Image (cartoon, rainbow, N blue to C red; front, side, top):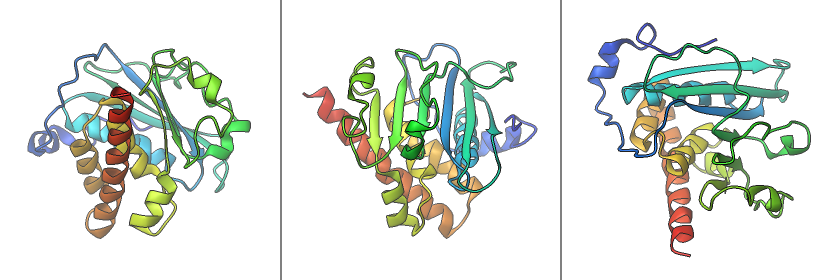
Length: 222
């Protein structure tokens, strides 16, 4: 288990960060994220980067994975908890506030949305619509603007030259939920991947963020 705190990144790193905590008015206790994907897609890294982004904003965070099999292509689940107080719970997340799906081929293999709150968020990596995927009726339970499909793999190929969707999905997550800022996501990425690789991943995150922001604005004006 990876439990993020001062012992890993240090209060000094947090203090030196120029990330400013975004003004989010609807925060109410712990926010729990479950990320589904396959081995080799950076699912575990996504959860860790999200927790680092929250930590840099002055919050407490925790990230850890669970593996059915460690082989490439096998289903993988990772979890991230974010709170304003110390996180003491350690078990896997059964009732998430948000679900991120990195691989849509898991839709018919894994219970991706089990326990998802009615006021939760759904972020799915695909260029197709929820209706195309047979999920149109399911997502009707959520408020408009709380579910989104994003072609994160295509965005990753454009910016990284590789089909690694995690950074793009984190940018999309920041826009969809406002639980962390894009600036903090970028800082977390650069801390993990300095240099050109970090820049490519940040560009992917920014691209997805802008895409979701534009779609959300269209929904709000509909």
